[in-house]
Length: 96
Image 1 (tube, rainbow, N blue to C red):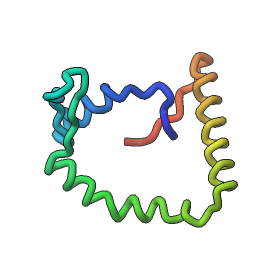
Image 2 (cartoon, rainbow, N blue to C red):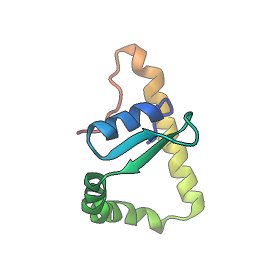
Image 3 (cartoon, rainbow, N blue to C red):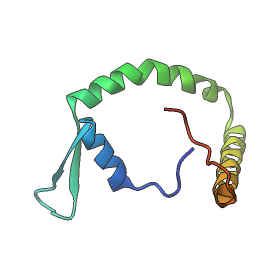
């Protein structure tokens, strides 16, 4: 699921901290940042390629209508989780 309140800068900070990407100010427009994947980041992508393909393969078997339904159900679960966080419910989180 995608976290609707995700923050791109925060996510890039984490990737930089793990040496997966580098970030520098764009030389022609200082309002922009150039993000470049590192050798470490490329190695991680290479390592994850096969497991990602195995995990996503079943989703290639569903049609567009089924994919939209699945996405809608995931949205409902996320919305339910977000709306019940204030009622002493723990949010649904992935295991690390």
